[in-house]
Image (cartoon, rainbow, N blue to C red; front, side):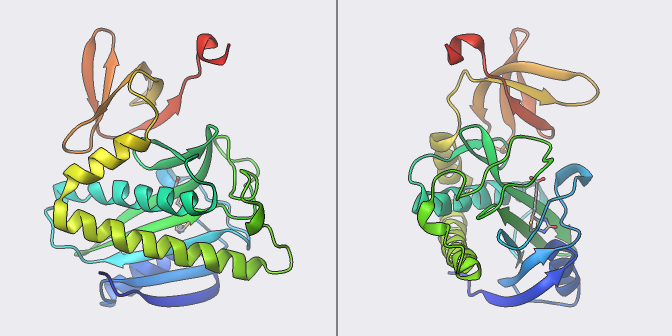
Length: 250
Ligand code: BTN
């Protein structure tokens, strides 16, 4: 099991930047940077990540002995750890969307950003606990908005976020150990169990023209499988949006 060494900050630009800096300076496997707020939180594809106090921001330095082609698997490990954490507060409601988005009622509750620095990997995780970011690129929610009322103790916001942090690190340690022992197969099975069903209509931004198709599963190398225009496509990078059809709503 990973032994975490937690470095707690009040305010940083980005916990990922700080974790990358520490990794370059030789920080060991299991170093965790946690901040009460970020002033320049980063999301995927150069987007910013709203980071006021009251939500969780942390980045974990990992030094797994792996070929680079398998590193993408870690983002699925992290997404499952977030689902386990959300389950502790709102059981059974979290749904996964490729590659690592965790949704509740179609709204995003968490973001995961993986970065490589020398031989280390930094896994950055943001989880909305008390606040829902305004002006987010996609619909967003938080544990409190989604119904985890016992997290909403306004008198103790720091304690509430710390409780979620403990649950997340505990879940990550277990998921990481399972992945190291069992490889991607069991991770893939668990991910598929919590993903939207096969056949869900997805719109994927790959290049200038989005592709719409139906979800056909997750490949053994973690690529998204999409049935589109009569053929099975493998998607290895891109943004995915769930398309809600009139029949599904009615
Ligand atoms: C996404 O775009 O969905 C990824 C968002 C990742 C946000 C987290 S918050 C902690 C860590 N520090 C950052 O600057 N980003 C990640």
